[in-house]
Length: 84
Image 1 (cartoon, rainbow, N blue to C red):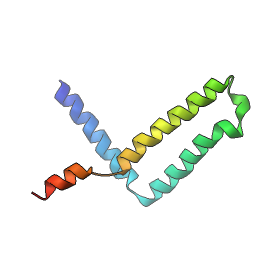
Image 2: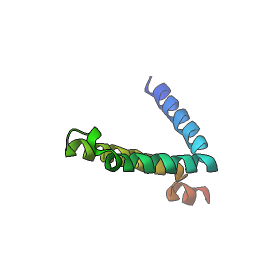
Image 3: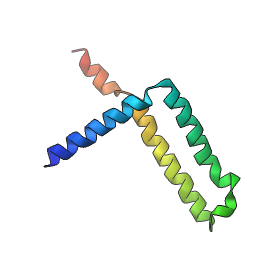
Image 4: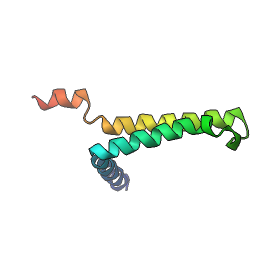
């Protein structure tokens, strides 16, 4: 059962990596991340507390880290092993 779930997650990650590798997707991603990070400063009245603003920034920052990981491609360890 866990193998099936792992395969689904792996396929979804591979699909997302293929989408993010397109040049246009990177430009759109840059604009979306910029707006998401700037939003708490452009409209501070939407947040009841400063903590809500910080939470928003932290979540966007975490998603950015995940997306950068997906854009990064294979790790250096995998490249070293491919040489033999």
